[in-house]
Amino acid sequence: MTDSFKVWLQTVCKDFSELKNEEKTICLKELIELCGPSQLFSLWHQFSPVLHCDFLQYLPLEIVYKILRYVQIEHALQCRLVSRKWNQVICRCIPLWKSACSDVGVNVDNVLFKNKHYSAWRKLYLQCRTKLKAVSNTCCYVETKLAGHTLPVRAVKYYQTLLATGSDDRTVRIWRKINDQFHCNHVLQTHSCAALKCDANIILTASFDTSAAAWNWQSGQLIQRFKGHTGAVYCLDYDLDQDLLVTGSTDKTVKIWKLSSGSLLKTLRHDEWILEVIMYLRCNK
Image: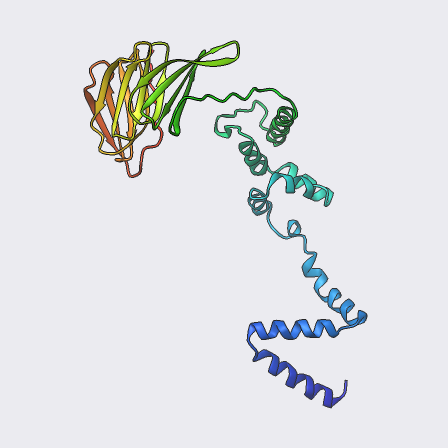
């Protein structure tokens, strides 16, 4: 390397360092296009250690597991083929397989394993995936279109052989299943329905009109109306034995009612809209 070349190179490097990022990128692109095989090989040799860095060799296993948790399971299964090390790490990554189980519909918070080995979650996911694949490849269900409502249906509840549907058209329709077909037996004139629950005797509806109501679905008669919310009632739950009804609303409150009389027993306040309520009664025995 001659002295004149060194001086020229220093000048070029100084000018390059003063360019904007976009201008540097353009210069590099032009230079790469001018490179021959030997120059390109030299570039590859310089960048190869960086581009082919295996992070499994440098990161703690706990960090690797946290990263793999956000990898889609299909990609993780392909990554197992990279090396024996990758296969071992992925197979033992409980957060990855737990997340995959959740994606296929498993309620991971309620899963209890007698054997807490890391392979338990992987086996559970593979079993679920096999079943889902069998379902998708088999005609195991019948699609039925229920016509009758004139506006969008907001709520559906299935009870034994009965199906109840609530709509913006201010009706609740009761469908009975006969020979794998649903037939509409009753039409209740109610209110706009955001949610509903039913049993063999009554239907309870939650409405956008800020109220809830109980109906005798066989006669269509209104049994009780529950007024007190100042926002749309989005959810409800009830217990006939305890004579209690619970409702949740966009007014950020949960209200507990006496089901038979409609009287308000208690109001619970929250910071957000109440979109789901579940009644849980503890039995002291």
